[in-house]
Amino acid sequence: MTGRPKYSTPALSAGIELMRVLCESPKPLGITELAAAADLNTHMVFRCIKTLQMAGYVVEKDGQKYEPSLLPFHYYAKPVARMSLVRAAEEPLRRLGDETCETVYLGILDDNRVMYVLLYEGTREIRVGGGCIGGRYLLHADAAGKVLAAFAGESLWKRLIKEGLEKLTPKTHAAAADFRTDLQRVLKQGFAEEHGEYIPGIQCFAAPVFDYRGTVLGAVSCSVLAMHYEKDDFGETIGRKVRACAREISLALGYQEQAYV
Image 1 (cartoon, rainbow, N blue to C red):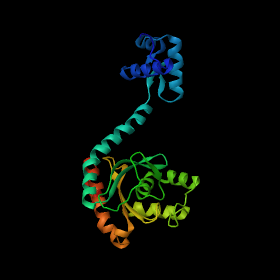
Image 2: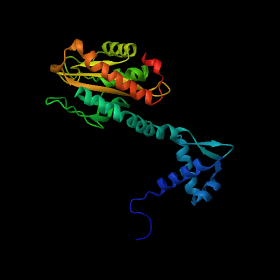
Image 3: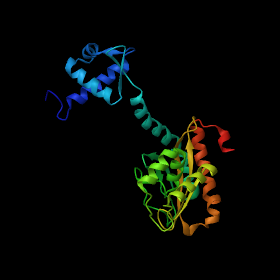
Image 4: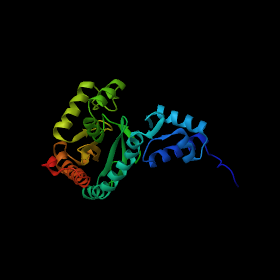
């Protein structure tokens, strides 16, 4: 069978080819140059370039010549960072699961949710379940979510408060003042705890994972059944191991040791 593939979209294909040409070019290119390099007619090139320009993917330079902006890099760098984070976290997180026999997670900030990108099930006969890779969970009631929200900054706090903080259990901190207090505590102490705020009878401890710039890329967390731990001992028995795991991952990503002294 010859001709265009069944599900091809000509304009999208043209836009992709034009971005390739622009990214490979050492200098800005005009419409005619782009048409020749991409083997497209000038009318199609003009429409695609103007669409890309309005979206911020292309900028105009030197009078009707065009080059790619850094916006594509901003977006494409996100999955690269996630892949690096997951690779660095796989072995430490697996060991954390083995040491605690509990369910452990690696979560990242995904808009206004925490999304789990790595998970190891606990080995206890009776253990926490329900979480899943790719699952997205409310930030304000989840220990990993509190870590990610705390380090994301004030603009996210305001947005979450404006959207409304759902009261999932009687223990959920759904009032704006309580939510802010939680996040300020996380920033001060460097970790988060959650005791029955998302699901009754479940406790969770989470600690941040930093990259070489000091940016929080994710959070390591461990969820347990409250029946297995005294609340006062939870931070020592589980929290110490979670923080050590987050530290190991952070150092592997180039973060500086003194942050954990």
